[in-house]
Structure formats: structure tokens, C-alpha cells
Length: 492
Ligand code: GLU
Image 1 (cartoon, rainbow, N blue to C red):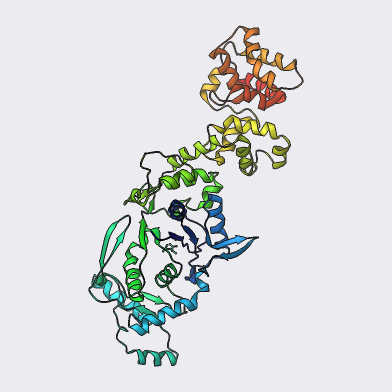
Image 2 (cartoon, rainbow, N blue to C red; image 1 turned 90 degrees about the vertical axis):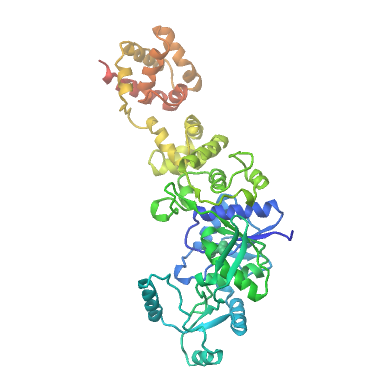
């Protein structure tokens, strides 16, 4: 096979959609598996959608996710730069290249100038709708002789350039996921190739760029499948070999609708800000629309490279399931070093006002133990504050079960014994925390559930939760005494 070259070609809309990250990931996996190159190209020909800082944001998101690439647009020393031999990689810098090929198409009779005003096009569309037809350009300017068109342009008339598709012709291509796809040109519009502002449309630019950049496999979302016949026609009339097309199933929500920004989290940044780990999000996204042959679901990027094939990409939409994402992410949280999870969770603690950065840093070992105590129960880092909140502030008993535990007959003895143990020490250290329950058992003769449940309820406010010895250590002498005292209020 030729040297594999693939590309991810996002438009700089201001954020990277997780469906986009999945497309980037599949491109990356395919390039790595085949020893090929992966290129990042920026498709910014729609000037109305331009957003400041969007390129940097896209690159940051890919970097965070650990998806690297060989060529194209990168950020070095805080500046956007382009790396590679087939650039520029930002479409707005390639306008003269597109113009050359648009001119060639016009000369060969595969494209034509169109002078229709917006008003006329709107009217045509309205009439077609009334007649129940699919709105489509009616070909009004298709047969204007080229000389006449050129004169009108010289005279200052506004124009666009349209593709002159042959009428009633089947266009077919092989898609690596969908198999053979055939569409008749009567169902396709005479696509605008160049707009009145001199910018190409996506369709013109994508074909020129994929060809000139030596792209062998076009791996993209299936929303582009209906456009592909136009691209295939362009390849043909420009005398170029078309790449292999690979259209990926759309990422859907549970209602099988497209995952849209209006419904909540869709950008990579949203998930980063929720405290998902890059390994978790990427591993999960690999599974949205693809499955490994052996049924494994947890894998490193290298293992994914090893297992990935287009044959195992599904035809129907991939459902984005947050619960499954949580399950995958929880796996990676458990695998990470606790110190690292502690570090990454700091902003969430600050945002919830539980601790300042300074407090965490100056009580680092304490903070790491705090995280260790809840780590196993986390599916993302934004859950840290709610999981540790019971250790901050006053004892807050809302659970009925906890109240019942504290009403037990033996509870005053337990509280007294705990208070005695505490008054015999300066401060709670690990040794004390590990051994105090045994001592209370000894001095009171109370054991098992009768012992553990009320003490847990008294100091944590809950009947379930993390290890008691950790809670005791984390609270410290003063807090323990305070809470034991507060717990007395639930006596019967
Ligand atoms: N710019 C297009 C997008 O953002 C890329 C489509 C393609 O990969 O051809 O979806």
C-alpha cells in the first residue's frame, strides 16, 4: 500500500466536539498502525463562523487528549506555526491555489459563473417548496456562454462559481464502512465552489487540499457522505485519483439524536473541566462506533493502535453513554497515582470553597490521604468535593439511619470512651487512628456493628463511607471532640 497519509480537518468554531475528537482519534490510530502520517489542517473558509483563539483551543484539546500528529498546524512557544512540506495547512492561506483549480474547471466546462441574486435564489427555493420539490439551484446560469460571463464580471457584476454536474448520471464510490455508495446527480445541487468573496467552499477546498497533501484515506463524520459524490466528480474531472473514503457513524445521545451543544456537555473542554482524565475520555470514545475483535474495552492508546481496523467500525450511530464513560474513567482514576489525582483535583476543591490552594499545599500529606480515602469511589474529579464534604464544617446528620444509630443505648458509653482516648493524646496520628477502635472496644466491651456504626455516624454523619481509621486521622483531635459532642444531641 502507498504510504498512508490521513488528516483531521476541523473548522475553528471555538471548541472541539467530542465527535471531532473521536474522528481525530480514529485517524491517529490508522496512521500509527500503518506507519503513516497524520496531518492537522484548519478549514476556515467560512469566514462568518470564525472565532478568535479557536485554532489554539483545538490544538490544546488534542494535546490534552494525547493525540499527536506529524504535520500541519501546531503551537510552539505560544505561537501558531505550520510544520510540513505540503502546507500552508490553514485554508484561508491557500486562496490562490483554489483559484487556479477553479479557473481550470471553468475552462474545461466543469464549472460556470453564476450571477443569481440572493433574492432570486430565495424565490426559486420558495416555489420549489410549494411544489413539494427538494430545493435546489435551477441551473439558470448554467448555459451562459463563457465570453458573456467574463464581460459581466468585468463590468463589475457579483458572481459565484458553481460545479456543472452532468445531468442524470450515477456517481459511485466505495466507502470502507458503508460499502458501495451510488447517488444520481439529479439528486445533487450544482454546488457553489467559490463564493463571491473569493473564498472557496468546503467542497472545493477539501478536494484540492486532500489531493495536494497526498491524503490516502479521508476519515470523517458521516454527515459528509452525501457530499462525497461531488468530491468524487471533482477528482475525476481534475484528473486525480480519489482517496479511500471512510465515513464514521455520528455520535448520538441516548435518544439517538445528534449530540448538540444545546443539550449540555459536548466539547472536549467540558469533559476536561468536569474532571475526566484524557485516558478515560479517549478510551471511551474509541468504543463509540468501534469495537475490538476480542471484546476488550479497556486499552491504552498503543493497544488501541494494535487492535484498530476500519472493518470493525459500525454503520449505525454510536451512542454516547455517560454511565459507560464514568465506568471507563473510574478505571483510570484508580490506576493513577493518588498524588497525581490529588494535584488534578485541587481546582475542584477551590471552586467549591472547601480548601484554598495554600491549605492543600501546606497540608499535602493530609490532602493526599483525603484523596486516597475517596479515590476508589470517583468516576470523575469534579465529584471530589461532594465525596469529602462530610469532613468539613459541622457534623451534618440528615440520614435517618445515622440518627437511629446515635439513639442506641450503648452510645453514651462509646462517646465517653472515645473522648477519654482523645484526651490522653496531644494529636491524632496514624498509630492512634489505627488503634483507637480496638481500645474503645476493650474499655467498653462493645464490639462489631454496635461499636462501629454509631461511631461512624457520630463522626461522619453517615452509616456508610470510607475507612473509619482514615476518617479519624483526617478529622484530627479537635474536630473529633467537636463532632462527638454534637452527636450527643441525638440521644434518646
Ligand atoms: N471541516 C470539516 C468539518 O469540520 C471537515 C470535513 C472533512 O473531514 O472532510 O467537519
